[in-house]
Length: 432
Ligand SMILES: Cc1ncc(COP(=O)(O)O)c(C=O)c1O
Image 1 (cartoon, protein in one colour):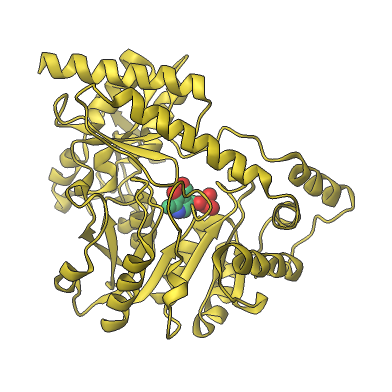
Image 2: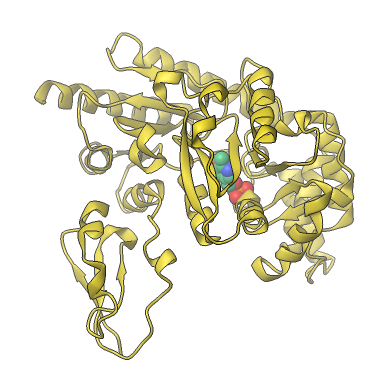
């Protein structure tokens, strides 16, 4: 039997990269994994190595800190993007009723027609998009839709352009689908917004698509309608697919949210939405994709190997969410706006730089005066101050020197957490 041997203390990704790949095929050292950032070498033959792409894939730093925080008593959790609100009762009740009625079987892989009709109405009502139900696929969270979108458009070795900084799961999805990523700049020096005028040089022979995300995770930045239009025009000029991650479409505080699909003249925008944040339904796993005509059959087919079909009762819950009262969204949006204002106020006059988010519920904070290693800083924060944040480096080079705070938490806890973060940055900056 192969026996994992954990080597402590945990090693960094850089250490892993330094391990000579030549030892991997040897019968003694067959596979190296950096999950949980511990080096694990499996000894003994004769088992085939695991898929290298997946074994070498970086772990999300958000998850790493979340795991540490979960084991730390009284830790204020500002790591995951997880609304603290419960799912509204009428949505829960719809699922319970469906289960009681015996609605517990497989459903069509594309999702229930009644749900897709409700989604079509929402896209019209909220996003101004005219998408019939037969161009919508209900998916198991936007995560699975994003992954199937990658599988649909990527040949082995093709590239996808990702904003830098970016939600780390996109990289994992692109790599899992056999693709490569190339970051395009959207860093703090640009207020976390891309400049379409400087993107041509990022396109190569194998570039297949670009991911857009507004409001952005991790920065909360919002692209104006004009900028979204320019980004879609850029994609059209280079014949790229656009994967538009619109998961925070209903959490925009002061500006107008524009879906990329609004500017899609020729069917290249694949739009992803989610019930997770909008209806505080993260655990129910319901998202949806609005697809160009050419792609819909492929996306529908891919549901079968990837998820089979979506949880039946969760679909009934989502249908109730779209058809029922919508006031909970405004309540949550106002709450997150209040949390944003509190955070901006608390950081004002501290000398610590932050960027006020226009939407979603994240805020980037500059910790470069306190530490040059955001992973190290985030771990120390959990251990010594009992507050958890996401290390900026997990979002790409543009996240260096920054941490991401999730503001989706109860206000009194947020206030406590922010005070701890501010104290730590100030103390570490003085000590540095
Ligand atoms: C930008 C972005 N897209 C997609 C997702 C995943 O959404 P879902 O829960 O629907 O899979 C998240 C979750 O944090 C996100 O931040």
